[in-house]
Length: 77
Image (cartoon, rainbow, N blue to C red; front, side, top):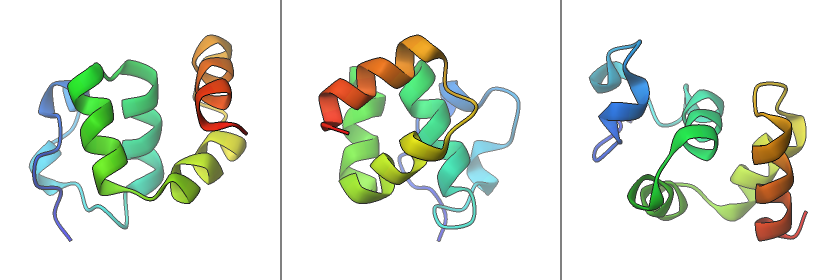
């Protein structure tokens, strides 16, 4: 499934139009949690289930310590 409404500015190093919501889920979630603004984060939470976001957050080695701690507090990890 192609990523409609994806915040293209977060994916400057790839063709955002070619991202697949299922195949690239982890990449999309990590990038949005790390760099996304309020609008991008709203899109993320309307696109993916909180359980999927939490799972990526728990396993991510990409997120900065600051972002990881912040989102852990927000999501109640």
